[in-house]
Length: 387
Image (tube, rainbow, N blue to C red):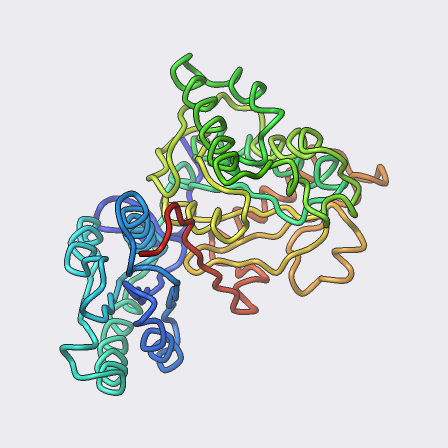
């Protein structure tokens, strides 16, 4: 039987390791009202974004799905949706989609309520009442196999593929052995190593789907008249010692461990339980992490050699580095240092156990450095042009 830990049990059977009151603007025009309410009511989280209007087709659908998925994330205990009143994202449909989880959802629009000042006053009182109810909820013992962890890398350097990514991979294998779920993404950053992941897919259909997603991404970049290899590795990656996209990709894929790949899912699609999955997603840190959170990840483990302060709105982000200088210079941002792998004083198993223990501690309530500093980055990956 899987180990247990304390977490919030949701009406739909999912578990949450945080209990956020999430404030969702359906459109950029309601960002400021949402931000002001967040500032007035401690414990609330707002996700300002640039979308929700002048969008059509798949682009409009993606915005809806990411907002709905973020509201449905099990770390969210209740939701307030604030609309302007004339955008393309339907606030009522959004509320209905999130209510399928059984969590409380309130919705109102700024135009009907009479402008920003009245909307901020109304939303603040509403948020205070909802927070009071959320704070009454108590944690209960839940099995560790309910945990879904996303693995991501950014600001990579030569130490990433040699230390932090393999250490995270060992921790990922530990969660898989408990019966939990791991999701890896960054379609642009498996190029050159996609055949190694495809060989690990449990069926030929899943393998074909992985190849299709890589090809689709490559063609989109070509359609813009660009070559992906012109921007990847980034200037920072090259300064950190990475020379080619293939070299970067080989290090990148090691962070998901060695388990077979059970499925391939679209950006922001719900992450299945039990096993390793691949999510089609960009390498862009914030867009990728936001898609993983919308898919239902409880935690994101983020490896970095160069260093980044990246956090996320509803998901704790654990920062792991194999670069001793980066850990010392950016100790306020880094959670786990595995650089001792490189001087020979720690084995891969020991470093992996250190990362795994940090995952368990954060699941049980320990704050990450990004949470302490209030990092709540959020960004929706966009497909089409604005009208």
